[in-house]
Image (cartoon, rainbow, N blue to C red; front, top):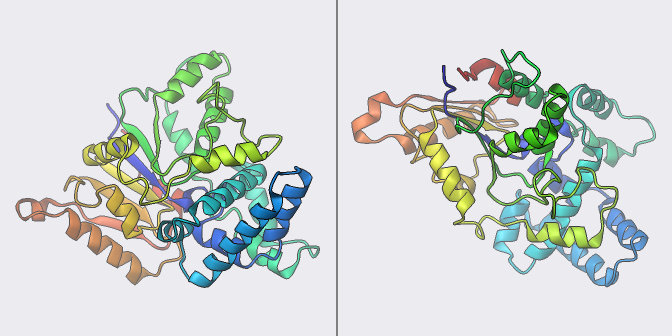
Amino acid sequence: MKDKKTVFVLGAGASCPYGYPSGARLRKSICLNQEFMQNYCDYLRNNKVDQADVIRRDVQQFKDAFTKSSIKSIDIFMANNPKLAPVGKYIIAFEVFSAEQKSRFREEAKLWQELSRNPPKSWTKTDSILRREDFQGEDWCSYLYNRFIEGLIGRDVLPDFSIGDIAFITFNYDRSLEYFLYESFSNSFTEVPESQVIQFLKNLKILHVYGQIMPLKWQDSNEGVDYKPQEISESLLQKAAKNIKTIYEQKESSELDEARSLLKKAEQIFFLGFGYAPENMEVLGLPGLIHPKCLIYGTAFNLIKEEAERIESAINHGRRKAQDYFDTRPTKIESDVDCLMLLRKYLILR
């Protein structure tokens, strides 16, 4: 039996179980963390970066303006302040690479989550507040991976992603999903040549609608950068910053066209760690292009029940037309589950 056409739409919360910051966590880190500027000063000094004073001044200016703006999303702040956007992209690149260095997966992520919840006495109060929000949520990637390989027995059998029934649309700049899948498949099927694993993974649609900091080595042998690179250099940060797009820079692109096409054909859609910002919904053409019989499920972490219900109502209203009003499948946006629990409750692949 063929797989249901399934699209996973990922927000920042989807990377949180592995050590990456949510949008709210990133804002806290920039605005509240006393070590934020010190980290940049240390980096600039240790790497003997040209024009270090200019970069330090620009980062401080961005920090001050973003803090006093009261805008929750750094992406929306950059879109509203295009002159500050290049500095914001530079900061995002630095923070994502920094998070990548400390990221963990599988059982190791759970161990670090426990450490974050019970911090050592050596951590400062501010540090404890921030790190308590590290590794939020359970390991949904491992669960989904095991669903992918369910029933596959044999040393050279890999799931077929070439038919396009599984796809990811991500608003995240990080590379955690690609790295996790490559590492998992390579070590699950050790007798399959690496070149075959790479080609197989390239058949899986993972669309970064606002860009990706850098491709991994297996994605691009020329421009690719190892996960957790040994050195975060100024040239790397500048390249990564150029790969990042703001909401209003990325109104049209081949990735967005493909993302909209995938959503239009989907039989089930899972919003994981997604914030349902109107700007992000609009850029994907949601909810209007979703088929009325498509099943829609989503997490709503840190939202109360009434807020989740309003999101449900807006999605249902937006996808209904007069002729299919009574055939429209209800949307389920749940405020009391994380990504893992949502998949356990509702994911049907075959």
